[in-house]
Amino acid sequence: MLKPTWKSFVQSQGLKNKKLNIAEVEDTYMGQLKHRDQIMGFPTIRMYNKAKAVDELQGERTIESMNNFTNKNIKNILKKVSKNKSIKKKSLKKKKSKKSLRN
Figure 1 (cartoon, one colour):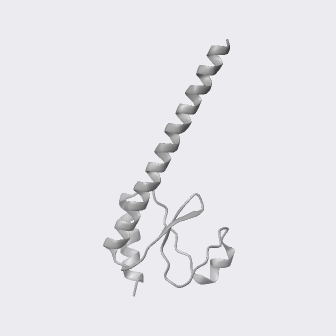
Figure 2: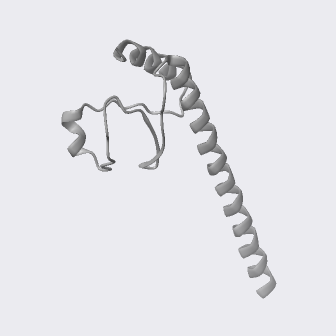
Figure 3: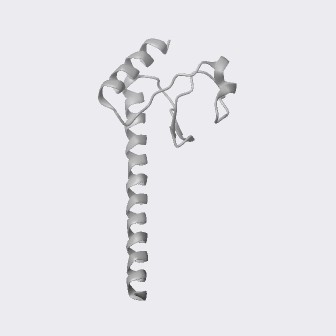
């Protein structure tokens, strides 16, 4: 049964991980969600970023596997965010330099 393992995982993440929001949705509420991804079975454990599914946990449902899944995905998301920020900074610098050349 996953429930005790899930509760332990949620408690451990809540204490140490401020970058993660954890939601538990019962099957009776699935139709009320904004993003209606196809769920093939329960329990389904997915990672979302900006309302888009990033990954789905496959395999064992242990605290260790859930922690590994979470850490891997947060790391990947933060890399993308960092990369996007540096691209935006470079783009702003180019715009500023073009603007200063015109003046």
